[in-house]
Image (cartoon, rainbow, N blue to C red; front, side, top):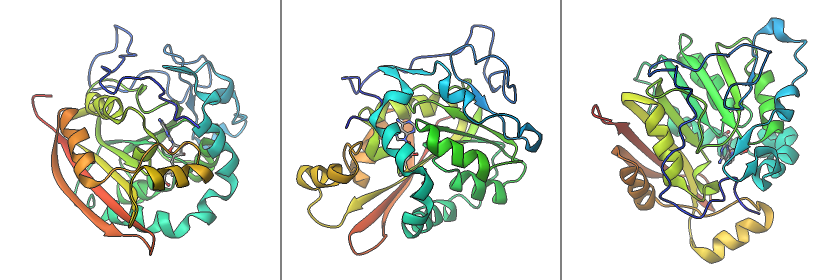
Length: 279
Ligand SMILES: C[S@@+](CC[C@H](N)C(=O)[O-])C[C@H]1O[C@@H](n2cnc3c(N)ncnc32)[C@H](O)[C@@H]1O
């Protein structure tokens, strides 16, 4: 099963989806609107409590397009659509540990706008909202099923959910202070394209925080092949050194990196990088 960004090149420049009229600093217009699709084909999901009549499906049928076709057709999306109902229960320990480590390293900061790439069921955004209730949160995911759950988790939160992919973000240049990618890196065929996109939407001095997993032993193509037997979208586990190289190649400055234990089979990696003031 292929990840959604199936392009061959790992050095792709980001595709700007911004209309000419939208300058840096602002989120694109159209959030909280149940009306037309975003000009670039993205449709925001309305999180307001009074938006209950919103059927939660309209955006699924929106003509959201990734570089290689419909987001909804990707195998990662299909896998997570299937797993959405049980994801939180099945992966509770893993999620508690990985998101806990991530949050421990972000707690001291103040963020006005946050984007969670591969937001899944919205667990991280909910916790970030608890810590930073003033922040405007955005979540993007390829799986409509996961976004459906996130919409329930985040009801009433000041934020937007987007159905789309990591390498085409529906936000303006320099419009967010923090981008998170929790357990998404191993699905990316072109991680540098996603990181360049993250850098594009970060304000100068903003932070990209990546957490992911790595098998204790046997890391490499055999283990990755075994993982793909049950998680067909899995591309490759990356260690800290490789994540560091990807972020540096994307023009970000790595400020922190460490590994940590998740359980008997897996370690976690945490890498934080800053967008330089000249970015
Ligand atoms: C392991 S789950 C993690 C969910 C959430 N970040 C968390 O930590 O609870 C991975 C999520 O990333 C999403 N995903 C995978 N590849 C993606 C991509 N290229 N763009 C956006 N989302 C992606 C999947 O649909 C899934 O919801």
